[in-house]
Image (cartoon, rainbow, N blue to C red):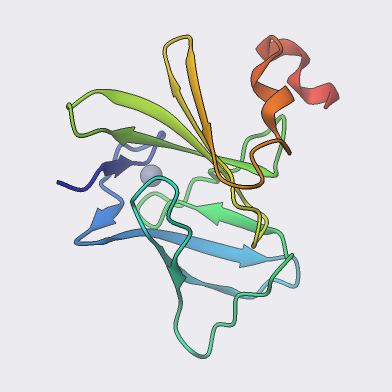
Length: 136
Ligand SMILES: [Zn+2]
């Protein structure tokens, strides 16, 4: 069974069949929907052909249900989602809002699982107390 993803704000279901659906906006204010692969470590993505996702661009990510911003306030490069894993356990999942950065952080209580070839980019974010994250 694929992992379920919830918006951390409204707790709406963001996975439909085999896609995690998010709403995104580029720095140049181009908006669209993006389908991500819900499997951890799979960086497959799809958008409508008229909405080009540009490598290296940073996107603001919104919940498509409640429209809350999912980028973290203390580090807007990171986007937080809630995930229900195959065991039914709810964990926090962080992904990069920059296209092409392949890193995923799964936080389960005090446990951190990092994956992806770019996982070193943000690993320090998870090493320090929440109050200090804004200095990164
Ligand atoms: Zn929401």
